[in-house]
Image (cartoon, rainbow, N blue to C red; front, side, top):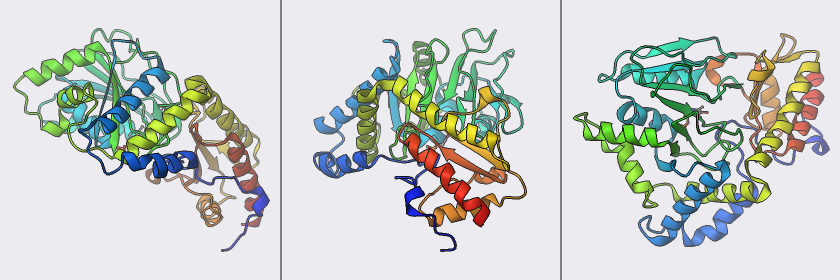
Length: 370
Ligand SMILES: *Cc1c(COP(=O)(O)O)cnc(C)c1O
């Protein structure tokens, strides 16, 4: 090890990744103990169905979800949900706001589909935010609530003039922290390995009545939909507290534990406050630092959950991240394809604000010694 950061400066937990992100030690302990009655048991029997129900109801409670929305889940993570939306929610043509890797990937999935017209894609440089604009013939509008690859947070609101087109928002890193107005969205979908401090492999979608109607209509049409991409099959299983095929039970246990923790601590308001405290510290530190600046220039676009900080040429951010890693502070490397002299810090509700403060202390200790 090149540099050893004094132990008294280190955070209590050194996991600052943006997905997979920190899983609370208490949740892991619950998996080891309580999990014994669930792990390795049938997902068609009552104990696992009760677990699925606990997660679905926990999400509805956390969000204060309107009664006519439905919580649907399935296998394959958010990436699978893009293809599910392409198969089961977009009738003919979608429009996308693309402002980073993830919002761009959904646009690519729609463009690749032979049964859809070419999508309308509005793109901006990483670090900025763009929502799709209303356009003729578009029946679904899509963007990411939080662009995890850049640390930019976008609003969730129906584009003016979008009529009865669906609004599909990727909430993968914002979910569990940032509130959502469910009048403004028809499918709010995410995976549990970020804000929900769980493991990957599943997707969840909070669906409006309009989204369910669209799903039914497309399912009844002559479009070929592989079973694993059928939102209707996922929906029909979910309302019976099941999944089409075997889910990761460990992921569900961790998710249920995290939801219980969030709700007991004060719900979404508590989560929002914790991440706001962590991110306010990180951005203030970066703004006052001689060689650092927040990557996202406009303060209202700075994500409360994924903080990106650029360094000037006096700092080798990769060497900094490697030094931190050798001291047990992991996953502050920037999104690989962004290619910037940067660190990226996950500040989901599971992360202690004091640990974010300790992180910047460790960076300030390490920088002059690199
Ligand atoms: C991580 C992430 C994804 C991909 O999630 P997977 O579960 O790995 O498919 C998609 N969108 C956003 C915004 C993400 O942060």
